[in-house]
Image (cartoon, rainbow over all chains, first blue to last red; front, side, top):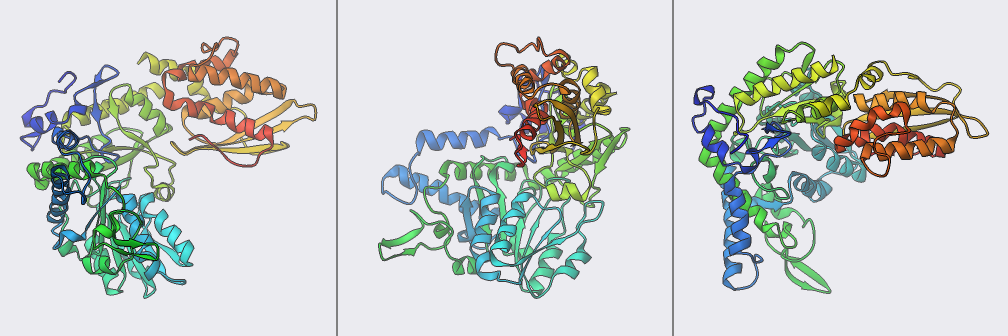
Length: 418
Length: 150
C-alpha cells in the first residue's frame, strides 16, 4: 500500500472508492518516488485483483482446451468460457448469447465485419459512412474494404466542439450507403455521440450499423435491443479485463448469413479434402483455440463492473470530469480540445509552445501517467489543427486528489519551459 | 526533477524556441524527410554537399517536441563545413551517448552535442534526439524514402 494517496470519503460521491481502489494492485506503487497517478485508462484500464485471480485460477485449476475432450478439465474450461458468452449477452441486453463472438479485441471485431458482410454488401459505387472522430481501428478496415470493392468512404464531419454534425450525417447518407460504422465515445476527446440517432437514420436507409464501443463499454450502459444496431465491438482490456480479448456482438440473423472469417479448427463441422462444412454461429467465427483465459478474465471484469454498478461508475467519473475541466480551464496557456455536450472518460488539451511529448516526460517524473500523442486518431488531430494532444482519462479508481496531482504536474511542466 | 533539468537544459530550450537554420530548401542538393509516429514529430533536412563530400550547408523544417527540434537545430550548427565521413563518425558518438551505450556515453569529444547527454535517462526519448540525425544520414545517402523511427 506504499505510495497510495490519502483518500477522503468526503472528497467523492462514491463511498466505496477506497475499497475499489485497493483492489487494483498495479495502482499501489510509486513512480520516480511519487505515488502513481494513473490517468491513461482510455489506453488500457488497470485490472482488479478479481480479474487477475480468474486468470490464475484458470491456468492453475482448469487449464484445458475448450469444446473438445470429454475429460473433466475440458468440461470445466468449456463451461467457464461459454458462461462468459451469456454474461456478455446480459451486459448488452442481447436476446441471444449466440450473437456474442469472442475476438482478440475491437480491431479484430471490426475487421471481421468488414471482411465478411462488408465484402458481400458493399459493391463498386457504394458508400461506407464513418465520422471524422474515429479511432484508426474504425477507419482503416473500411478504407481497405472500399479500396478493394471500388466503394467510397464518406466522412461525417464534427463541430469545433468535437460533436458529430448530425445534419452532415443526414446530407451524406444515401441509398448507396451500405455500412454506417461509428465510434460510441471518442477516445481522443471524450465525446459520447448520439448513436441512437445515427442508428435510426442509418436504418431508414437500410444500411448495416456498427458501433465501436471500445471507449464506452466500461462507462455507460449499452442496450442493443434499444439501440437497434447490427454490430457492436469492444475490447476486454478497456473494461478492467485482460488484453488480447474482445467481443463482436452481432444480430443473429445477420451472423447466420455471413461466411466464416478465418478457417481452422473449432469453426468446422466436417472437413474433407473436397470441402468443409462449418459450425454454427458463433463458433464458425472463432477459428483455432481462443484466448480462453482472456475470456474468463473478461467474465470477471464484467462481474466487477456490475458489482460496482455502471450508475455509480458514471456518476463518479462525471464528478471527476467536471472537476478536471473546471481546473484545467483555470490554467493559463492551456487549451482544452473539444467541448463535447456529453463527455465520457477523457479530456484532451494542449499547452502553449510545449509539445505534449515533453509534457508527458516531465509529468511522468512526478508519477503522473497521461497519454501524449495522436491517440490513433490522426484525421481528428488534423481536423483540430494539432499534431498531438495531452490526454487525461479516467476510470472508477481515480480520485479528486489525482486531479490536483495532474494540475501540479502541468504547472511544473510550464515552469520547466518558462 | 534533477533528471528533468538535465534533459531540458537551457541550450535545448533555447534552440527549441528559436531553432537555427530553420527554413525551406534553397540551393541544397540533397533532402530527406523523417517522421516519428509515436509523437508525430516530423522533420525535413536539406543539405548542400560539395563534390568533394563536404556538408557545406544544412537547414531543416518541420515540427516536433523540444528534444527533436533542438537536436535538429544544434546538429545544423555543429556539422556545417564537415566532411561526410566525419558527420557519420559524430553521429555514431552521439547515438552512443544518448542511448547510454558504448565507450563514450558522457559526450566527451562531442562538444556542444554533449548537452543531449541527459537523454540517456529517458529511453523513450532517444528517438526524438536521433530523428534529425537519421534523416540527415538518409539525405546524404541520396535515398528518397521517408525515415521512420519506430
